Image (tube, rainbow, N blue to C red; front, side):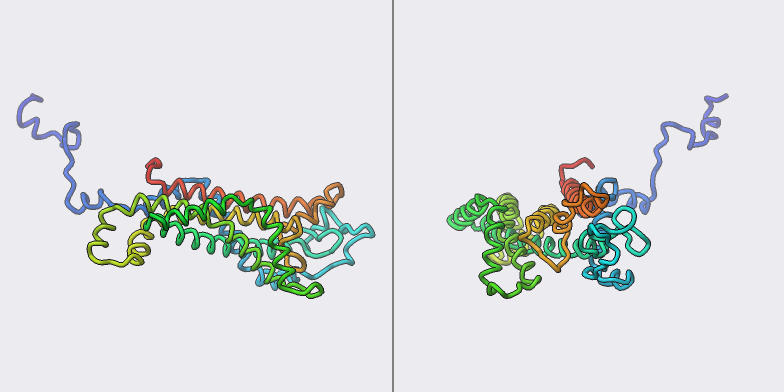
Length: 340
């Protein structure tokens, strides 16, 4: 009979719904794996399709920009080389969509005759150099100001907070339009040519001057919530210096918001640099620049060479959008309150 002990013992334990599987010690150790906050953030990023797509675009843009001199050699022409013989009497490139061909992949610049592909990749290189250096300097200054104000408090916090609020009151674009030409003309004589490297350095300096306040306020708020933690009190009790506490105890615990602030500052500086060049006070000839390509291309919108405007404008849009989406995804992945 099925209810006899012998019959019960003969049943397969695997078919018993009430059976409890006991894992060996090795398997049990493998089943429970601890992950650091960085590993959890990486897992969230890998599941985010938007982050993956924007990351691919950002990496591709960076690789193309860094490899611009090599691409120029392989392509067989420089960004400043002109092909006026391939323009018609109206200054428009001969051929389809602005002279797109096997020799000129994106066509030629209308009225100038330079290869648009070369101008585009070297223009991206210029924009990324300016944006990366400006973001690095502004985030560094903001971190130093914010961590100092948040940790010391008192009159130090009051002075630095007042300075931050004072700088935030200045309209960035208006002062950039005023400061950049003044600095350029003050450093060189009227008839003296201003080097492109100096113009780029001035733009980076202006961006850093007006770009550190947001990160300073962010870091200050983080430090205010961390400075009374047990590990900070333990460091004080052990006789650690303020510099040690600031940069060895507090700073490693606020790297996530700093990284997010840096990733979100990059697209803002790329767009701002393009805007200044569009207004003809940023990077000027002969240095390639995306904003100036858009400025030159706008006058050819009503002609068959509309690609001269469309391609640089689309490039600026895609690059800024990719960096913004990656920064937003990074912020969500590093947020400890996000869904697990």
